[in-house]
Amino acid sequence: DNLLSLLSSFCSVAFNQKYLLRELGQGDQDCH
Image (cartoon, one colour):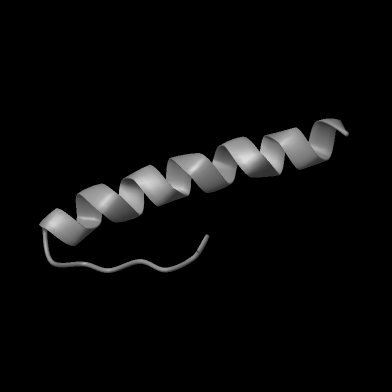
């Protein structure tokens, strides 16, 4: 499904951003 792959890619991007934000002291747990 196209939507599923889009959501998956967004999730991976959000996960990467969470990783970066964690370095700054901001723990985002949206896609985990």
